[in-house]
Length: 139
Image 1 (tube, rainbow, N blue to C red):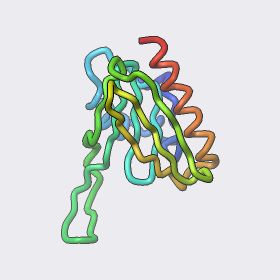
Image 2: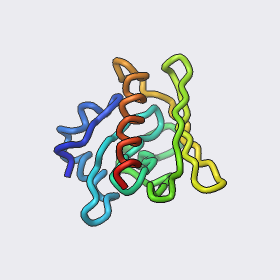
Image 3: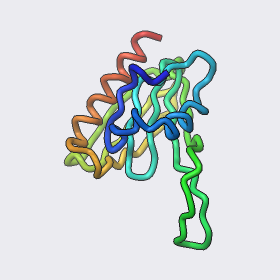
């Protein structure tokens, strides 16, 4: 399920974390395969051959600042690739960027605050864009 997945950003080590992989796998549908996983500062982008998902951490919290545990991920945004007409990647000094998807007359925007745990955030964003472009061409 994840043997060919490209893990980018601070999530590069995620490919060996069985518990976290299971939490990501919960969001895959049937025979869907994860192509790329980009770890951002406040969320993650999961690209499959069918969908692009923005996953937010689901935390068990007590009070305002006390995080008890990480419970997995919840889907914040979901886009089916069959609906995407075009995409655009923009970045600003390798620190933050925007992923814009054209869906009909509508534009869906994913802010991309790049992870500080990455050696080269710009390269990670470019590689994710390459994977997205390949997925869009093969649909």
